[in-house]
Structures are given as C-alpha cells and as structure tokens.
Image (cartoon, rainbow, N blue to C red; front, side):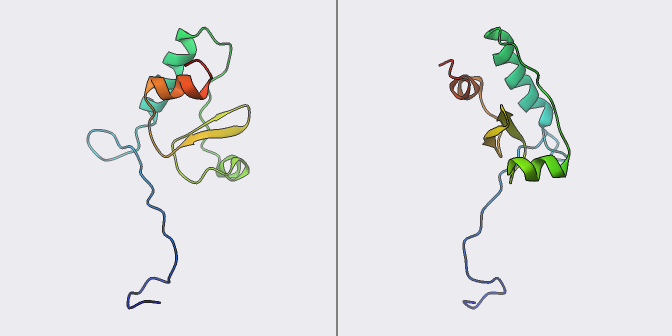
Length: 92
C-alpha cells in the first residue's frame, strides 16, 4: 500500500447512466436506442432484458447496462447513440 487504505493496483471507474432524477439506472434509454436501430434497419431479432446475475457472469458483463449480440457482449457501461449501435451491427 502507498499511504492510503486502498491496496495498490488499478481501479476501474464504472460509469452508469442514471435517470434525470439520479435515482435509478436508465435502462429504458438503452432499450429505446437499440430498438430504434433494429426497427429502422428492419432486422429480425429479439431484444431482451435480463436481470440474471448468472447470465451476466456467463457473458462476462462487468458494467451495466450491456448489449450482447449472438451471445457476445459488444457494449457495456453506457447508453449508446444510434450511430454506435449501427456500427456494432455493421450497418454504418
């Protein structure tokens, strides 16, 4: 240790998007962005929400919200803009 009560090492800051009132994570914003891009591109897919800790561990999700395509996490820790989702889907 280096003079603090924390052990030496690297610490990750986990950015979490909150609702305007700051009381909860804005999961609806993430779903809206992903659904908008999926519908606009006329993709056939299922958009699901999972709160299962076991599923998050299985996928290796360390920050929420997260987006996975075909079982692979492609985004976590922030609400993406539509353009970012398009890039993740190979549409941009």
